[in-house]
Amino acid sequence: TTKTSLLSLLRHSPHNPTQQIPLLLRHNRRLISTCIIGAGPSGFYSAKFLSQALQKMMETRSQSDSSAFVPPQSYSITLLDRYPTPFGLVRYGVAPDHPEVKNVTKEFERILQQENINFIGNVTVGGAKGSGVSIQELREMFDVVILSYGADNERKLWIPNEDLIESARDFVHFYNGLPDAEKREQM
Image (cartoon, rainbow, N blue to C red; front, side, top):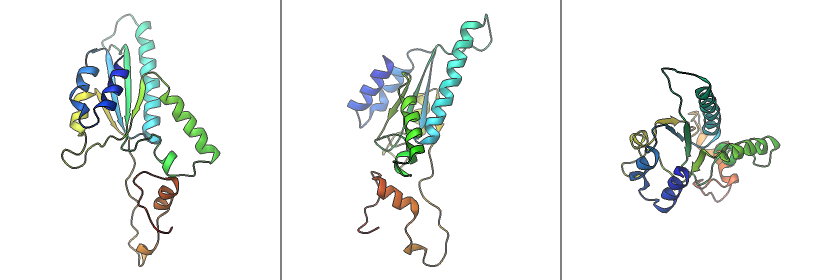
């Protein structure tokens, strides 16, 4: 299947898999392919509601006689993230053992279990030239590209001695083992 081929390609060609992806995704024009950049809460809710809307369109297709708009027969949604695992702040930004966090994690896992939704981690989008996949390359590979990522840094307050205080974000990232969290001798 296209999903298996795409995942296999990305797993076995981590340095430059983008050259062959258009061939995999564009072979069937009745397929709407969507890329969601960011696999945190915003990305997963985008995938969930987009999937529901596309599913409804496909059901409507079979019920309508003729229309100027022809809904797709199939769709794929690919969530990309720079981290190796999905869920963003749900995994790295809050207490992972909190009951509500567990509920959200289970919901996101159910979303990922859908046949037409997949996650690809360790993908850098944008950045310095040659250091990742560009938005333009993604636009050429997918029919739709959704930017659904969070802010990278906390905001500074610009008050005296602010540099003596660790942000809650830094502490939680360190506590939860975020892959690129700065290692500190003491927290």
